[in-house]
Length: 442
Image (cartoon, rainbow, N blue to C red; front, side):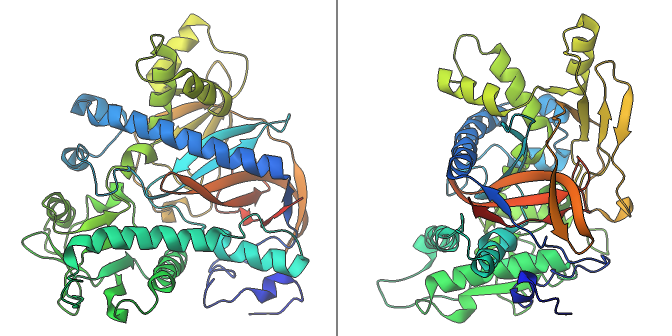
């Protein structure tokens, strides 16, 4: 670590190990902060909570659909049998993050939900506090770490309400709460360990230390009965997994055994709980936004959405279509003369994104360096969504003063909005080049 006499020097690299990200010349945070008014922060959180409730409702609709419809959403065939049940919390995702952009009139538009494996947890729940402390600014995430601890403890308590024998004064450690990722991904490992420490902080000395443990995915095994085995022979009661469900389902052993299928069968039979639960893949599919938009514009009888919910969809969501439906709109001439963005259903980090005009002609394409290194499932289908012309801003970085664009995010702890986060990118479509820009309250 090279000290540069700015606030970034205050970040503890043990907590935040990817400030200097491997393979990148410049430090990940911006030197400057982004200021948002109380009203903007309140709207960001309120919109996220309203959209989350709508998305949960649509997830229930989706779970009743046929395999043919799941094909439209590019849900892997191996996952489909496991998406029709409720999990112990009754929520399709337990930790998620909504992403928004501002238009030229400073109106918010939701562009994505990270429902399965949201990152940027350290940035929002720890790093933002350090920036605000250095600059003596009001922190919009002041209480967020306590909220995170409370939520994780709630998950923990629900998990062990049956397994733990409190009446007899004994606490079994045979089935720990396991946090796991592929440990050679520095960001994933940092995020996973941060969440594990938050849970440990939450439960304190109430339980033995080895009730909450980290294990690399490389070290985990799947027993014949579908239980998840740790290197010490114990089996997991709950598994936090920072690995995309659409990839996990197709994992195989060196011998060719279908580990993903065995794993999911164990979950189905109640051998362990999953965090996030499998249903998170439904919202994670970018086709989900096209589904919400389609339902909202066909629900004239109010069978699915309330009037307020329809208002929320029209206010914060963008016109979004499956590719074939977009083609129909083109033929009818019903599309406004604006740009559209084509996103691969399972794309990540901006990889594979194109911007087209109303006729479908290519305007621009996102370039992602080392695109083959982006961890994602290949997509045959795309979401077509109205493109937002964003206002530019300037922030200081290790490259100097840059002009760029902001993506604003809000984390959801279950149904509750919590920490906010922002990315700053010199490009209108943020990708691996994006910086993290901490936020203060104006």
